[in-house]
Image (cartoon, rainbow, N blue to C red; front, side, top):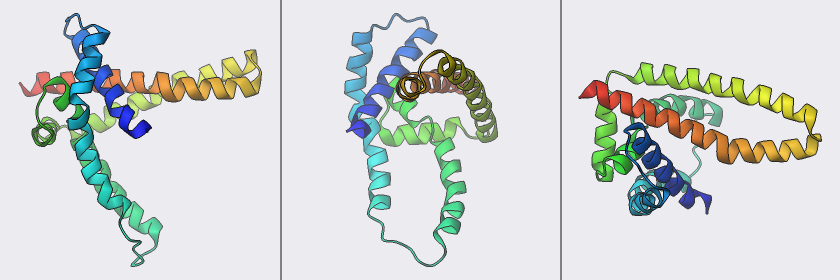
Length: 178
């Protein structure tokens, strides 16, 4: 179920953040409506890509760890190059195929820059979460903290943090490319 709701939530966040960055007054109702309109187009490509992987028979040609390691590098590269697919479909309103094409062109020549920025911002996010965890665990009972922190970090902080970062990176790449 969360796999179908998550794209809608990303669409709402991306559109709202994009409007805020551009000085447009976007209401939450407009963001929700845009999310509903763009939900299926942003969901269709991941479904097409992951359905064959889900039903793929087990491959016994090499150890699975080696296979996954060899598969990880191309997946990371392609994932970074197509990482702005949702942004183009949600913000610019293009079709899924054009969204993939535009994301690929947008990151052309900027793969390492995008990778470094995301790694640095991941580290910054970790440096924010780690002290917060230590402080709250000393103030509140440990069991409550673990549940509260997990929910807050997983469903509130991290998605909003990464949405803001990715929209800012997208905006900068668009500015550079135009």
